[in-house]
Image (cartoon, rainbow, N blue to C red; front, side, top):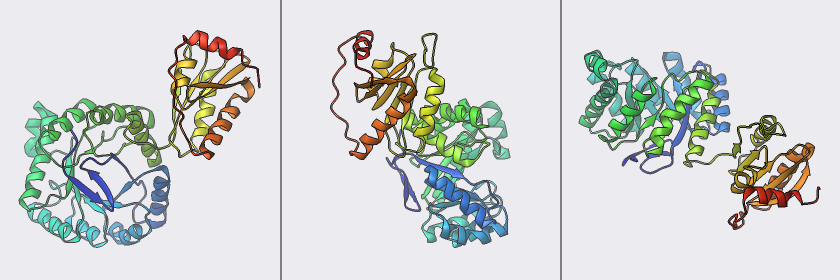
Length: 377
């Protein structure tokens, strides 16, 4: 279920029915302002909407005012163990602060941070991580780690509510995907606050993207989750790309094209893997949202390519270019990709109008046979 409450992080609404927000975290030493702001700029160009920076030392807090001033997107200060650094981050006018009330130094330190955040009008993120649960919950964690994660988060919620502060979002991250899914489902039934989703320490781009897609995708499909971070051992730009692919697959966000490509089989006469890779590489330069299908033979070509905005179906010597459910042309295979992008570019320049589609009444094989009679361009 969607969260009832919302928070605003530097002008970006999270929760309360807003589309899921994509965020990431810099890898640079935060006190290196030049490197940190350069990485933030790269993340913003990739579509990142909120960025988190680690603030483990005083010199990192010293750098925050300049980073906040130079950043094109809202900056969140990520702070553990040291409440004074959280106070300095708030003074630097960061858009939000992420703290763990369980390790920030006790209730009095939490109260000091909350009072400063309230006075500055900025939200916080609180929450539990399976790798750093409080000692008094270790017994519960051995029985049910998801329950322990939720209880740790609820203890923090109760503390902030007791201070009359409700401007926060919550996370209950785990590197174990089934635990993460169950914890968020349990928490979503108990609180009205926005939820920050993540499979913590997910791994390398290949395995980490899969774990993140399974974990966050399962929750997002049920309407749970208001902001996401894909935690990869990689350039954080890859986190943003993966996050948007997850959201695009669920029709929750649009950013750039979506490509459909057949898995290939013994009917492939065109080398569909290489064909799809060429198309995908060229699609990366397009910010517009549209769908392109790349098929290797006549079996699924008319159906799949017909459902997409554009498509190509390859053959040994010739291929077919589709647009909005109709065959546009038959061309030789060596110019098939160029002709596809010629039609895409023309459509974009003409305003991206999508014509009314006609239902395909003919079997795919018959439609392809008729398309084969089109003169070669």
